[in-house]
Amino acid sequence: MSALIYAALGLLGLDTGLAILFFCNFNIIKAKEGLNLPRGQVAWFLWVAGVAELFASYYFFAVGDTLDAVTFGGFGLFWMGLQALIYLGGDGRVLGPMAIAYAVFSIPLIFAYATASLTITAIIVMLLLIFLSLIPAAWDKTNAKLLGTLQVICFIITSIAIIGLVLGSMTGTSLEGIGKMLLGPALIT
Image 1 (cartoon, rainbow, N blue to C red):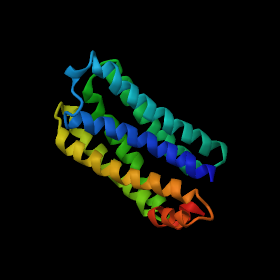
Image 2 (tube, rainbow, N blue to C red):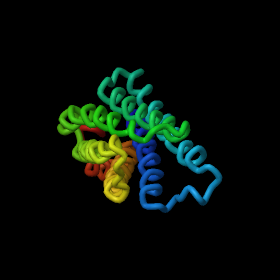
Image 3 (spheres, helix red, strand yellow):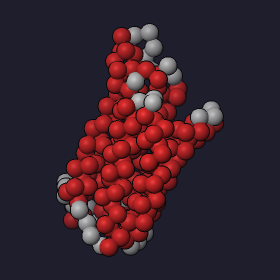
Image 4 (cartoon, rainbow, N blue to C red):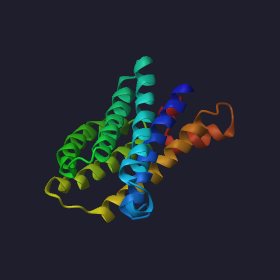
């Protein structure tokens, strides 16, 4: 049961990062609304997202679940790197090569999770699409609306997975069945 909660924690970290990014991409959060917003709130939320995923990664590493440990650890490091880039005011063109590396990292994960959960597989496919849409940043080209749309879709799928994990952890209740339906029985049992 604790594995489900730590997985939910890691996915909540992902949701936090996605939410802050699509708020920025759709200009819901604007730099003019806060004193030095990129060095304050945005960087803080991305740091929190990375820490949540790294906590989940450590738990899975401690219990010997290498796939989940590497998955959460890798994506947690992405959020930490993005936080450092934003906080330190680095060159946004670094996102292109970083996105290529994470796209390559995501492809085998799609196949690894395909047999366990269609919901988790969909999250990783969406992350792959997000990374692919970040590649033009290497040439100083931005596509904020496309990126924001992909982030919203990934946020929704991740939220469904979090609900499935929380409900799946309620063993012996009818809610466990709903959790299994949302995630797939292989992840709950």
